[in-house]
Length: 406
Image 1 (cartoon, rainbow, N blue to C red):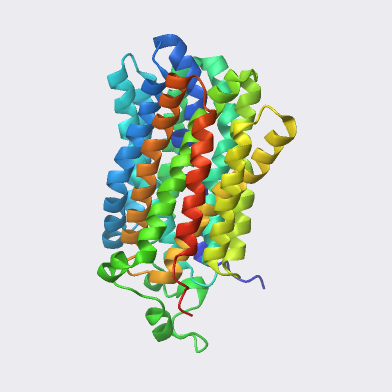
Image 2 (cartoon, rainbow, N blue to C red):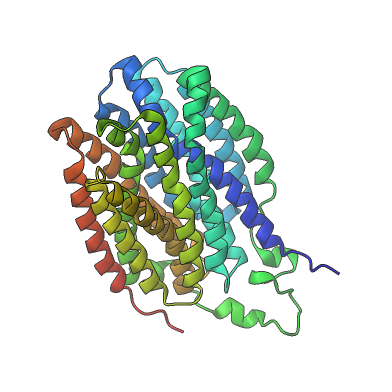
C-alpha cells in the first residue's frame, strides 16, 4: 500500500507554481519590456528603472505588514488577494499611455506581490516543516527561479501581440493560475492533526511538547539580537545586487552587441541555474552549519559579479552563468532556513517580513543605481564592481552571526 503524501508537500507544490508565475511576471519578465517601452515613449533608463524601484519600495514597506498579517490571519487569504491584485496591475500596464499609469501599474504589482510572494509562502512552508525545512524551502523557492525560464516566452508574445497585449495576457494568466492554487494553502499542520514534517498528533513516537519548545524566541527578543540585524543587512545587499542584474541584464548585453533573443535566453538562464543553488544549498543547509553554507552562496554571488564586469570574454561569461545564479538561488533559501532554526515558528511571519522588507530596500536601490550609473557614465561596469565589493562586506556580516544553539 502506497504511503500517503504529507499534505505539507502539496502546499510546497502550490507555492512553487505561485512563485513561478509571480516571479516571472513581477521580477524576471520586466527586463524584456525595457527596450520596447523605451522605443515607444523615449523614456530614459533611469525613468524606466524607477518603476521596478517603486514596486520594490512598496514591497519594502508592506513586507513587515504582510508578516504580521500572516501570523495573525494565516496565508490563504493573503495569497488570494495578492494574485487578484497582481492581475489588475498587469492589466493596467497594458493600458499605459504615461509615466503615471506605468508607475501605477507597478505599485499594484508591489501591493499584490506582498501577498503572494516570499513573505507569505516562506512563512507557510516554515510552519509545516522543521527537520526538512531547507529542502522544502529549496523546492518552494525554485518555483520563482523557474519563472525566469519563461522570459523568452515574453519576447515571443511581444513579437505576436506587442508589449501591451503581452501584459494583458499575463494578467489574465495570473488570475487563472493563482486563484485556484490559493485554496490549496493551509496555515499550520496542528490544525489538521499533524506536527511539522508529517508526524501525527498523538503518535507515540512524536513529542509535541519538545517541538513546541525548540528554538522559539519572542518577537521583541528576536529583533534585539545582533544576528538578526546582520541577517537584515546581508539580505539588503544581496537583493540590491541581484535585482540590479536581473533588471538590467538584457539592456547591458544589448549594449555589448548581443542580439535581443540571445540576451533573452541569458536572462532566462539566470533563474534556471539559480534552481541548482536553491535545491543544493537548501539540501546542504539541513546537514551543515547554515552560516557557512550561506557565506559560500554569497561568495559565488560576488565572484559572479566580477565575471559580469568582463562578460565580453566567452569563458568569463560561462563563469558568470555558473556562479552568480547559484549564489543568488542559495541566498533565497537560506534566509528562511536560518531564521526558522534560530527563532522558531511563533513569530516567523513577522521576522521574515522584516528581513524581506530590508531586502526590498536593496531592491529599491539596486536597479535605480545601475540605471543612473549607465545614464551618467555610459557604462555598467563600475556598478558591477562596486556591488561585488558590497557582497564581500555581506560575507563578513554572515560569519558574525552567532552559532546556532544546538
